[in-house]
Length: 113
Image (cartoon, rainbow, N blue to C red; front, side, top):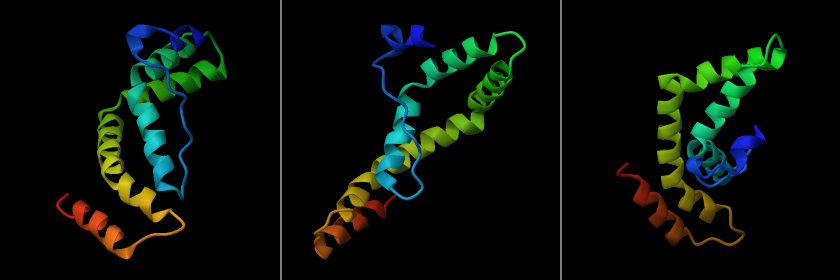
């Protein structure tokens, strides 16, 4: 998989992030890292799936098929879109000191969505 890491045709290398159940700003970074590197991820999974008779190759092939599924790709696009819009509010609300007026303004900007 390292052969893809510095390949310019797939864009800038971004480390994949873990998906945090409680922090919305971390969720955006996790989704964005997969969204930006989907081709690199697919190529790495395809390469791993070509190994003969190993659990890794079976797992990689299963993930490859799941990631290529339309529902996964659509879900990734939707999450990237939604998290990009809610990120300013989520980031602001995580501050130690917040102003309720500013929070309300950021919240109202989300309502037209």
